[in-house]
Amino acid sequence: MIGCRNYDRGDFRAAIGLLAGGKVDPGPLRTGVIGLPDAAEAFAALTDRPADHLKVLLTRAELVGSSELLTGAGR
Image (cartoon, rainbow, N blue to C red):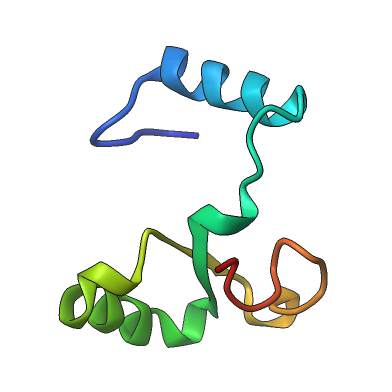
């Protein structure tokens, strides 16, 4: 990670520890998976319907649907 507006390295270390220890299921946090070519759609959804989204993952288009993490919405 290069930078983040809201969190620091300690926050990420703590989150990774919780995920690695199985204490947090990340699935329900993910509300969408969108390929980079459709990034404008993701930002529009976050702006137009903020109550519907918590975390939208942006990834390379060819990876969408390639794993459980990169498939659809978590809730």
